[in-house]
Image (cartoon, rainbow, N blue to C red; front, side, top):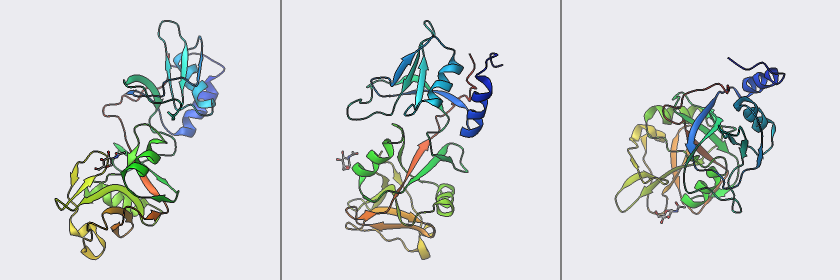
Length: 232
Ligand SMILES: *[C@@H]1O[C@H](CO)[C@@H](O)[C@H](O)[C@H]1NC(C)=O
């Protein structure tokens, strides 16, 4: 399955370390590559990315065999407008797959004011497709309640007092948060306490302008992403 190569043992050990296989996925990416080089196989491009600090995804020109290593986007190297198929690990670095195999989370321990702009920017600094956590099923809530280690970390849900609903601050999608999810079955949210944090007993709404010690980001595993060992 793999080409005979002296790099193979190294590649296999790096696959084992990452605990994940590679996937091909259409994404927006930084405009300028971190490095371009070749001519290499896809396996070698993957390994090169793995060993290159700052590389999060890679691509390979099927005609020239040239690899491109892609960094995270930044102010000086913004995201492309269009999505293109790139290769990447199944999960961005540091994300842990939950008991729902389509969703991974990562907690970020950094004091931060609440609200959509700050949390979204912070999550996207992991991966362009990472967003503030939006648990919207009982299973997802229960997973987070039993696995988060930080107290009162921001999640990506806020209360919209005009309509009396809770919504994903990234997409606007509303979510029903039944009383039994909350501490002592007590739903507390208001116009001044509308940004949600989450801890082991349930969500807790605080002022969006206050500072919490961290927040939780979510990454949705690309639907139908064929797990593809990085072969030629
Ligand atoms: C934050 O939410 C406000 C109000 O819903 C919206 O106008 C703004 O564009 C959002 N900002 C970001 C970065 O999503």
